[in-house]
Image (cartoon, rainbow, N blue to C red; front, side, top):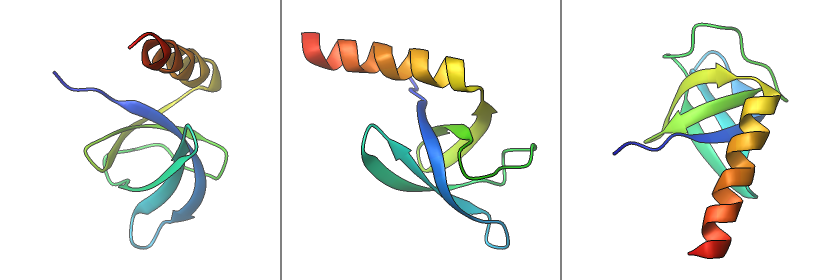
Length: 75
């Protein structure tokens, strides 16, 4: 099973194709060549295994993060 985690872009390097994202307070570097849309700080990316696999809207990101928080509280 694969699990993509949404993260908010806080830094971006377009030349080297990576971004730093914040996911629930944890900052990670993800590579962005798979994302076809333009990325800017404040955007949300779905990340898996060190790669951003797509750009997602704020509502979808917030809903997913809320579900992940609920799962972690009930684990």
